Length: 86
Image 1 (cartoon, rainbow, N blue to C red):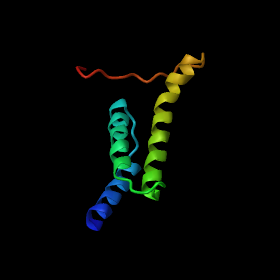
Image 2 (cartoon, one colour):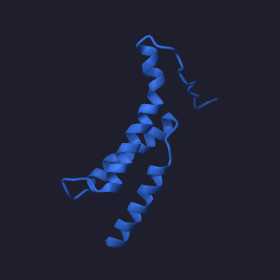
Image 3 (tube, rainbow, N blue to C red):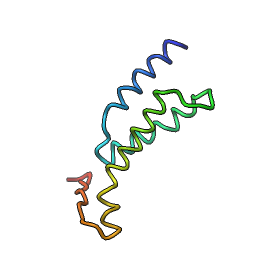
């Protein structure tokens, strides 16, 4: 079990280092969080898990800032969202 735990931590560290710059990437990252938490056996998150969640939160914030600015009357920097058929 230790072997797979170590492999998962290495994979999590790699995913953490990749910025989620699109809605699809943020969605994919979000789907990892329930899986990660399901196999967490302690009440406190280990450092790789904390780093992953902090990285995810930063990606979501960075992605949504243009939308939020637009909604509160700020300058519109809304990114263009590509449709699946484009």
